[in-house]
Length: 107
Image: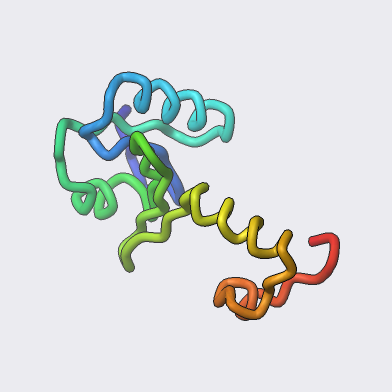
């Protein structure tokens, strides 16, 4: 895909995952209306951030990470599962994420 100007957000892979990762990334890009950018094996992401997109959702075998010029932020379902288990057991004050976001009942 040829880009004439940088897009705000695009999708790619970490460049080392199996074909299933590429298929998931392509499907997500299509579902979300985002461009998918092919990435060569182990190619660095920084050149793509300079020329193609302001940020990337990078799919790997185990997670999806948001990368931009300032670094990365990832969501890992395993951690969310642990948070939910703690909340179900009534433990709310030990979770830093919950302290910072201060969710209310129903959110």
